[in-house]
Length: 140
Image (tube, rainbow, N blue to C red; front, side, top):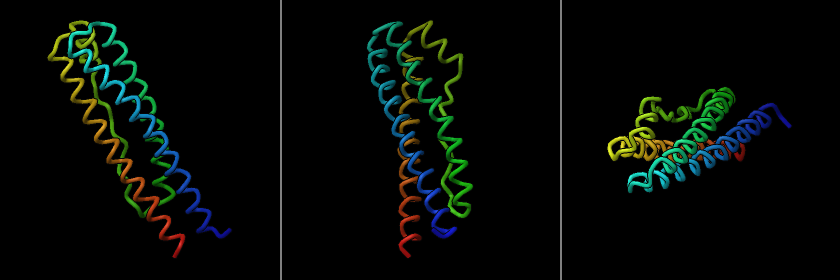
C-alpha cells in the first residue's frame, strides 16, 4: 500500500469515527430536547435533571469529537473540516433551570440544545463531504 493510500485510509477511518461519535451526540441531544419538552410542560425537577445529564453526556462526547477532528485535520492538511460544535450552557443556566424550573430558563436551554443539534448536523454533512472527497482522490 502506498503512502498516499495509507494517508487516505487513516483520514477515512478518522472521519468515520467522527461520524459515529456525532451520531452519539445527536442521540443525546435529541433525548435532552425531548426531556426539555416535558420540562417546558411543567414536569419538574426530575425532567430537568435527566435533560442536563443528557446534555453533559453530549458535551463529553463532543470533547472526543474535537480531539478526533484535530487528528483528521492533521491527516487532511488541505481540507477544511470546521470545528466541533460547543454546548456553551453556563453553570448558572443549569443551576437556574434546575433550581427555579421556570419556563424562561427551560426555553433558553431548549433553544441551545436545538442550535447544537443543527451544528452537529452541519458537521456531519462536512465530514460526509470529506469522505466523498477522499473517495474521489482514491479512485482517481
